[in-house]
Image (cartoon, rainbow, N blue to C red):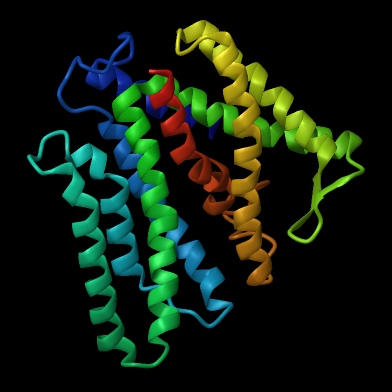
Length: 274
């Protein structure tokens, strides 16, 4: 998966000319391949979230939720070549999404469970669509190397947390949500994230070393909070994993949970550094 992801991002940068550039102004349209990847991931992610919702007798309207999430996630991409007022795009998308949910609910379920169904659909669209949109925004505004830095810092923190937690974990980090997480694992997450962040900053000239160290430290915690957020959903649905499609992980949601929650904060951090 790591090799595939790197290959997609590098190929994406090669196509739009940002692979070897310090800025992303080589071509007017950036991030096409990465945008397609995000759109494709939205489909299995929503289907997995639908399974969790069904365990609580909630209905996610897959056609509306998937299309709305893809539009939200890719809005930064479309704005590169469609003349629209940026401040109006999000309100208009959310308005039409809400109206579509009401229409779908009425046609398929009438007035039965409207608050619960529309509520869980709004949550799924914001969780998978709005948050992943910040990943696309990072790629388009800041380029492929900051995107790779962000993803690898967050996922390295996951690896560090698992490794240190398995070897040395004794003190529980969040026993009510995820009993396997420990403070020792958290220390491993911080160490791994800071090393990767400083390495990216030094090798790709993204930011100064001390800012990279702060980036790694902060996103080790933010990434773990993203993992805990999905764990809360799985615990509520009484499921160990969101699916069993990815050996060693579970489902797509179990892979993207940390970057999803961390993406808005990464966008703000890169904005501050620039």
